[in-house]
Length: 266
Image (cartoon, rainbow, N blue to C red; front, side, top):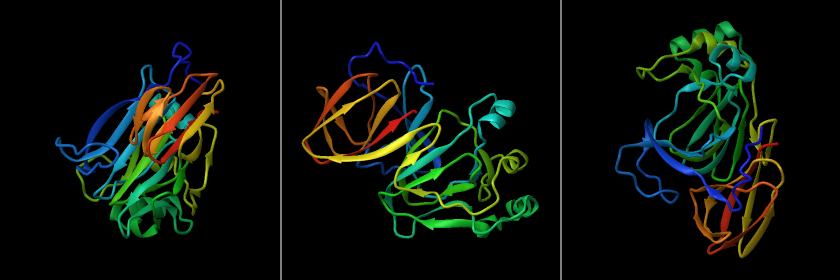
């Protein structure tokens, strides 16, 4: 359901919060200043009251856990939460960087459980080399992982329900029963030029000079990927997120070439 910000006649900058992760990085440039507080894995862009969507920047130096997210019905029944469908826009990728999406070929639930227990699930997954500028759509139920050496921008449902299936021996809880209850066990090709699903639609926009955007009754946010400039008189730069007023028009003026993701909640 769209969240009204009708009381705001100007774009609202989303608040940034930094979250340390064992797989994170201190190298957040050029999106954020160098961080002295440890290895930052996630920078959240949030609003009060919370939006139906959550926006993040992720920075990895190690592989994240093999994991899966439930859909709405299962999450509501078992976690009193929304489900979690998400997408990733790759911002930076070291040579050889890769992500896992689905399995290389269809497996049974019993095979997947055994593979998660003995570590051979790494060999069953479909590991995909990634490059900056690519989009990947990860619907609920897709077994997935983000590899090392990647910076990306993530759009997701406002949910923190994650079922870990394998974690490289890290001392964290696994969730095999719930995780494999919601998993799809076949191949999956998640690369997209644009993403449109029941929860959000995204479009990449690049411009120099001046850009005018008109909004409707849906929640609309801009995630700044490159460049800097002015949005309705307020300075913006890469790494920021902006919530746009409903049923209005905003004007962006670029000081340097700008690339952004426009996110609309249908």
